[in-house]
Length: 204
Image 1 (tube, helix red, strand yellow):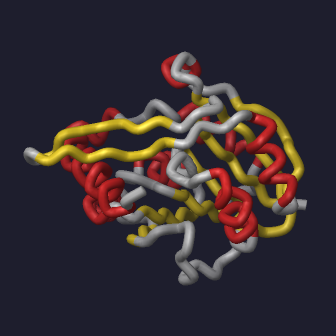
Image 2 (spheres, rainbow, N blue to C red):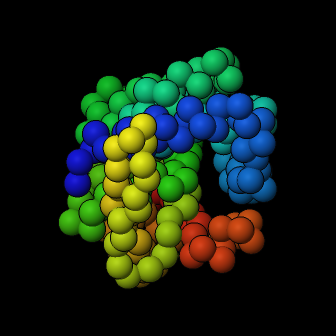
């Protein structure tokens, strides 16, 4: 898988979605539900933060948010739209620069490009950035097979591989990295029908 192609894909999406930034609130009920189980004024790490929609929602509820994404255009937009949050342009799967401990980690669609053989390793490393008893909310696409999506960007075809996971695989990976399963979180109907699922784990 060419990571540069994936970055091009998300840079392009960020450019296309810039003018509609204010409409990106589909996950508001999810962020509100996550905030209920976190302490007051929590510190949250937003993995694959994109244009900063969810970071903005968390911040409005009193959270201190750090977002990380490898798309330059996404990070530029997030910094412009949500200046009260901290945003880092980096690949969270192998970035050593985050040393803080957070009350919660939020991951919406950001683990879909991680192959199964790397999943537990990545989760294990991310656990180091979570306080004891902290929560990890993952939104992933459920299924058994990976698939490749194609998009033409400025005359060139770009593809990205998306990995879908069965729930038992997700649970095994998190439990192997020192987490316990807490609960499933209900997602908006538009995500459920396309097999997206939200699970919350707690660091033991």
